[in-house]
Length: 128
Length: 111
Image (tube, rainbow over all chains, first blue to last red; front, top):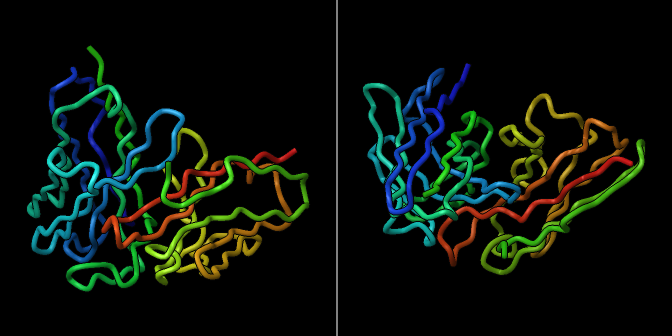
């Protein structure tokens, strides 16, 4: 069965960086994009970034460009999301999710992804 | 301020029918991009309820249905049950932002 297992909770100081992992299993790693979605305490869902594990192409939300980096390790079927220059507003639960029912033209979505499979979430707390 | 606008809260009695709206613009829903819907119980990951505007993944009860028209989409829930109490989010793609976007979420309360 498809599983996305994330790394554990992190506590970081303002200005630091955090790197969260998402290990995929139960399917061919390169067959689906992986996305990151975050949720601040008591707030809604916010899409951050995506990566195509087949080739490593990425797309980042404008809000996070320059601060977020997604990478993959195909040997372990793991996706990483690193967020730098952390501030208190980055305190949130970070989810990885697999894109499904989608079609990517190479430059934009023809059918945007739906997220069937989610990781369990990783709480990142930014505090001095 | 979310790109997709949802009512902050809705409520209904058990057995009733209610709808949750999701209003976008010409760069997202109005451009023809699919809308997906999620249910989230606090403290857990979201669960996909509807994909591609109207389709239910296997295992989702047929009490849940989706529709889309123009720059808006709606999620309808019939035969409301206490277990439906959760937060609901719509999601689509925005060509101006070049990324996926979510609605602000709607808290459903079963009276």
